[in-house]
Length: 129
Image (cartoon, rainbow, N blue to C red):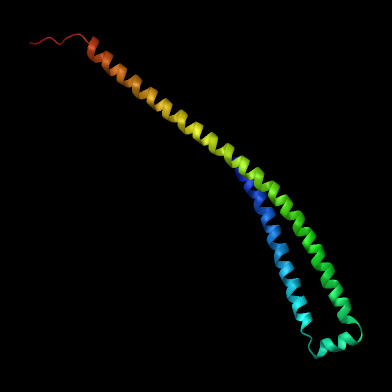
């Protein structure tokens, strides 16, 4: 179970990184959407080429974030496979332990029953007074 917990923790860390990247991508996309609807001040920036620089920065940032997200998704898939494998091993170990406990309990009951039978059969008869 410790290995499974460690695998879960690693997966959670990768999931958190994915969520952060997705949130940043959403923010960049919202900025790009705002840039498509220019206001009065944005028109002034466009006159000096600021809008092109801004669009370029948004495109580069979006591309960088998408590459990072692709890398994280690949790592996430590896961790997911490891998590599934570890979970399977954990389940098998739990099932084996449960079966072993049942076997031990059954053997103990059979031993107690045999002891009770042996005591009843081989006990000397009581004297009647």
